Every structure is written in structure tokens, then in C-alpha cells.
Image 1 (cartoon, rainbow, N blue to C red):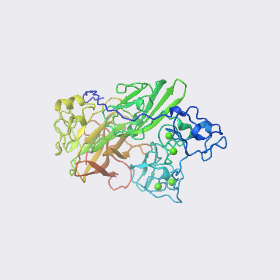
Image 2 (image 1 turned 30 degrees about the vertical axis):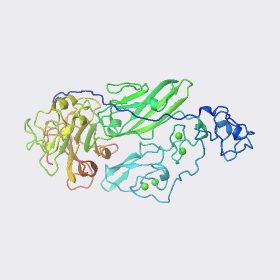
Image 3 (image 1 turned 90 degrees about the vertical axis):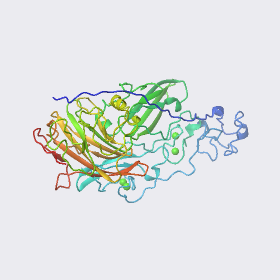
Image 4 (image 1 turned 45 degrees about the vertical axis):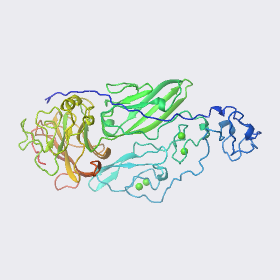
Length: 506
Ligand SMILES: [Ca+2]
Ligand SMILES: [Ca+2]
Ligand SMILES: [Ca+2]
Ligand SMILES: [Ca+2]
């Protein structure tokens, strides 16, 4: 096995906090258990509120209030429990509308029987469309599976679906009303519906006190679920929690959670708060990690065994990958951003594609943060890490401010090891996952014989055309997955399974 070189890891803490107002409690709701024979004016002698909605309780169940009094179904000050006066309608239709991410016909499948572009990722909601983007409901993602003409949308996973209404200050069933549940007259849990965006390689800190202020807690249990590479690399990915702290996770069983995402995309966070009474309170929400510009991410299922490398080609050029002859150090092709020239510590000169450097904050938290700190800036393009034999680490190439309307080509090379390996590439534009290539069930073939520098399997993945506004912000991308020449389906891999073969054509 050939180890190309070592690398340096620096951990820097950049924390930010989440502010939430404490929940108002209906503390004087005690004694409000009107048993049916009292006027409301006398009902709550201590709270100074008159239950205008309930004039006289003529029966054990309040007129105009479907909930029995034993469940505190009144409208005292601070109590929000009630029916939802104008609940959102499910909005189910007769036919499915293609490629809108909604389950228009409410058959539990999103955009079924619709053609799509292989590897494309879209936001989706596999519940009645009327509840989409309402209350606590959040979209998940689905990937276009198959190849060529035979494509279909895979399952819609992630996001937050409608749940039974819990007393947490959120509209969990997404019917337009928060806490419309008679149990919710005393709400002391405040779950967040939105969270501030985070950045890759920067600590994200969540203070559970913002959700539950009580001191009667025996345990905080946090779990975080990430995107395609996180799921492929689990359980070795760095933020894995469930009480097992790793070198980049603090507070897995404490009130304050700190996690450090290595990737862009949506992270689903769940916290279970166990009280001394045995009751378990729970919040689930999504933290969006939004790396700027174009981010290309590579992971593979045999990290620690195989050395696989990510390459990005300069727009408007079609020179061969590596070097014209595919060999030799000190002769990198600077149209190709890869491990010999694009890291902070690369031994060849950095490619100059005409981009300004980025502030140090964009990369100082990454694997080679110390080296970027020594330089004083973050280069564009840049490779954050060349993972050779480390288990569970992805590689990223970033262009923080790419060109508008220009096309970047992505490639993956098998350097060493015999696999069989299954590389997975994700494309993020402006912080949003727009494409994923090589994910099951559409695995990439041929990564069974690494070929060292300039030979062996080479997969040309996708052409990415970036769209950038006048402020330099990436607003989107067009993705064109690459097929073998003359074909309309299949992955474009040359020298598959052959370590001595060389084909480094663009
Ligand atoms: Ca459907
Ligand atoms: Ca649809
Ligand atoms: Ca509701
Ligand atoms: Ca709720």
C-alpha cells in the first residue's frame, strides 16, 4: 500500500447559541377542574380571567368545548388548548403531478411514475400535500434512481412528517394550529420550528435549556442524523452521539449539545428529555448546514482500506486528468484540482483559476485548518483533505464563489486498494444537496484495483453548471450526469478493475 503523505487536524471552536423565549405557563390552572355546575366567573378565583367561551357549564363537558374539564379544556389565560377552528385540509387530488415533490394523490408515494434525471435530488413530502410546509412539517429528500430512460424517484426520506399533537409549542400535526390538544393547557416544552443555519467544520451548539427550563431532568439524549455520506459512513462519522462521545462531539448526554458537521445539507436533531417523574419529553428539528458556493463531496464504503481521490476540472478546459502523461510529481495539471495541488499542504503549486481567496473562517475549522491558518486565507478551489487510510472521513472540494453559467466536471479516481469500493459523490450548490451519484441501489462498478497516480479506474461523474447572482451567491446548479461515450445510461468509468490501464481523457 502506498501512503501518499500525512495530514494535520486542528480543532477550533466557533459556537453560536439559539435564543428562545421561555414558555408562559398557566400556573394558576390548578383548581380549574370545573365539574360542571359553576359559572366561569367563579371558576378560577385566582387567575383573574373569565372564560368567555364557556358561559355556564351545564354538563360535565363544557358546551362549545369538546374536551372534558378533567383535561383542562378551558381557555384560561396562558392556556392555548382548543380545537383548531380552521384546520388545514389534506388537499388530496385525483392525479399525481410530476416532479413537484408532493404526493398529490395521497397514495403515500411522491412523484411516482415520473421520469427524472439519474442522480438528481429533490425536496419531497410523502404526506397529504395540504400539510406540506405547514407547522413543524419539513421536507425530506428523494433521489432519482435508475439510469438513462429507466429512471424513477426513490423513497422520500428525512424531513419531519405530521405527528400526533404534542405539547411543545409546535404544530406537530401540521393542521395550522399549535398545541391543539386538550393535554396542552400546561406546556413547559418549547421545541424550535426553525434553527439558524450552520457551517461545515464549525461547532453547532444547542442549549436544551431553551427547550425545557425545568431542573427535574435526569437525562438528555441527543441524536443527529445527517445526509448521504453521513449515513454511508455511520457509525464512524465524527458526530455520532447516543452517549458515545467522539473527538468532535461534546455534550451528548448533557443539557448543551455540541456537534461539528463535516458536510453540508440537512441534519435531523432529536433530543429526548427524561424527567424525574419518568416522563419523557421530546423535540425533533432540522439544522441546515449551508456551505457556500459549490461543494463537491466524496465518500466511499471502504475508507481505511482503499485510497480514493476526488478531482474537479476547471471550466472551459478539457485537458487530461492528472498530467498530460499521467505520471510524475511536480507536473500537476492545474486544470485539475486534486491532492497534489489543491490542499493547503500540497507539494505542487496551487491551481489559479482566477478566484479570490476566501476569509480564513471558511476553512480554518476543517481538517487542514492549521495549514490554512498559516497561509492566512482559504484558497479557491481547495481540497479540504486527502483521505488515504482514515476510516469514515469524506473529501470535499470547495469553490466558494464559482463562475456564473460555467461548467465544472467532477471525477473520482481509485489510487490504491482492491476494494471492492463504492464511491458516492454529492453535489451541493448554495448549501443545498442537488445531486447524489453512486448511492445504493445504483452503485458504481469497477473500483476493485487501485492504479496509483495516473492509472487505474477513473469515474467521470457529472458536469455541474453553476448559477451565481450579482452578489456572488450561488443560487443553483444544472447537473448533467455523465454516461460512457455514445451511451445514454451507465456510469462513465474507464480502466475499471485494471490497475495498470491508463485512460485519463477528460
Ligand atoms: Ca403520489
Ligand atoms: Ca407530485
Ligand atoms: Ca396542530
Ligand atoms: Ca404541539
